[in-house]
Image 1: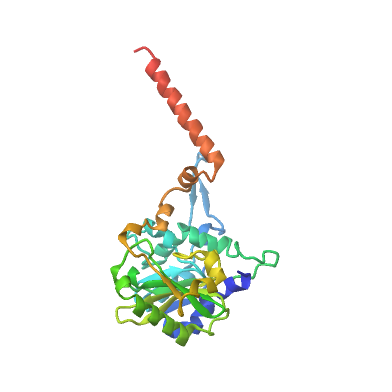
Image 2 (image 1 turned 90 degrees about the vertical axis):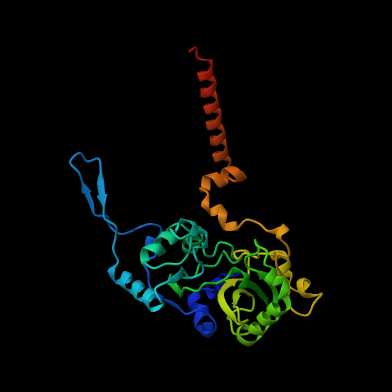
Length: 315
């Protein structure tokens, strides 16, 4: 995966190409992106008499705020927000309605500030690229607002393209079992293949890429997103090793390999659930940060010693 491929998967690059086949969106708002994670604006600090407290006035962006509200209203008053690549799917737990549906700029900022996916877009968009020695392309960050649509998870699929050939399709919400997919496997695969042949193939800037689609209740297929062909993109029910080999997946069949959860026995918890846990807890439980684990064990030992001393103290 090259840096150029990541750049080509920005929303503002692919949306004009496939505008007729995706959800209505607005991506012209130029936001003060540095304020999504931290504010570089000058603080209005007022010292109290005892010089122990400060009053900090939040920075304001009236023109930008007006543009965002205007765009939200134009899209029906409810929007799905994202940046150039990612949506804050890992942060829906912090919203009052546990949804990515936003009605105001404050709703959007709350999700963005709580999302590791958004932080990745802002700080390390080229982290897993193979051409690390080349300079990073200049990125103009954009706030993307998409018209809110009630997408049923059973209709979402991820498609993998190698050398302009659709080689694999995976159920997007692979943690759940949907009997509907089992019953309509052939129709689903055929509809996605036809959509790819008619609207996607040879129209994108790269020959290797990943795209997400939604098949509605009438059987029509819509483009939802485009992602780089590489480890930065979740391979779902496939492995990147087999996807990169290409031919091995499709050698036993004419069309793309289609994988989905086939029974309730294989149902799993959503991967996004881990983002609801404080990062320190995750590091300790997985052993990823040895120092945090050592500190935790020392704390538990200290608590145990204190408890033993209290038990041994005469009453």
